Length: 76
Image (cartoon, rainbow, N blue to C red; front, side, top):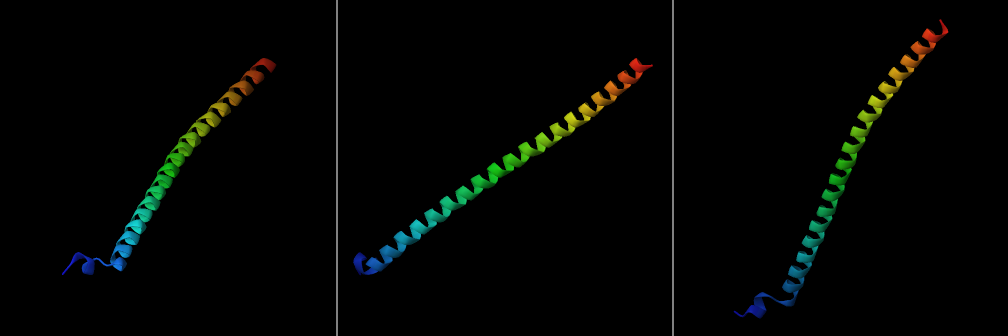
């Protein structure tokens, strides 16, 4: 039995197309993983920024209260 009979043109075309399809799928999977990782990094940054904004808001509130107290003291 020769190799030509076992690996005919249809078998070679099938193997090439299956290889191309597998590589395409793997590259798409890599792109998806990168997208998920970048969105996770973005979500972490947003969470940190939210904490910082909350801390700044609390600090601003404390400053407003202190200024109000000073104004009341000056008016007395």
